[in-house]
Image (cartoon, rainbow, N blue to C red; front, side):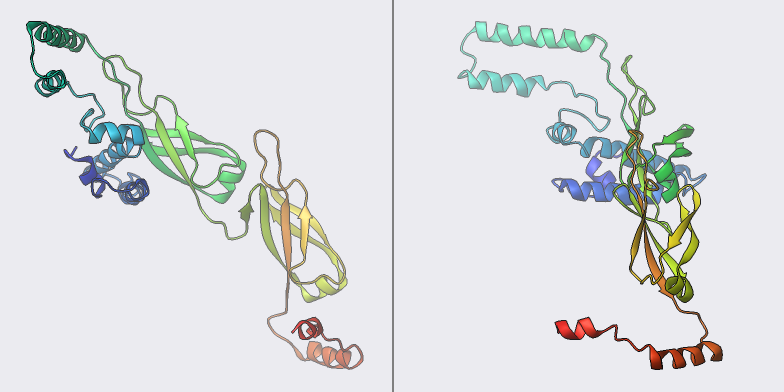
Length: 299
């Protein structure tokens, strides 16, 4: 790993937290093992970037690193006795007597004894990104993520939102000196869907209908997260009219459910043939109406 974690992420020391996070996301998307199969160099850089963000992405660890209290691996650094105890002595007005010296050397001896004892540290967390489809995020499921030591099955909780993180306990870097392993942190990126969109627990869908379905009404099939269902179109329906399919939205593990909101869009036929043109010409003479009257009145 490079000596300077800021260089690993390509940011300046003192960079804002948002800038560090942005740099981390950009690098992990570029270097992710799934996008660079067989590229050992990219995999090593991916590990280094993840390890650097594990420190710089946390305010407490970043502060310790900036003050020189921990190294690039997150391990505590040995105290600097010469500077530490010189400052203590200066704070007392200098080495005034052997009592001061005795206190200082006693502390040094205790610190050395503490360092001589085996120390344990928790392993570093490992960060990964996983893309899931809109449907996978909505209804849950299982998917594999490529980790440094192989693939791992991940359970996708139903209803998970874009940007949320799944924590896999103990699946990060191994601990040191008997310490616990770190965790694997899987950040979820939900891909957009050509049919559905999400608003909280509700699912939105725009449903095209024909001119005659809008005018005469009827029953049509509508896609939902769990398959097709029937929907009754009221006679005289308009573009922009919204209908509700109760309980057909996102369902959380708590049992709370959203609805599916279906917005109608009246579509004209691609070709206006002679029969339709003749019918409309005759119909408008006896059934003329002005759909723009309200606009003119409000202007």
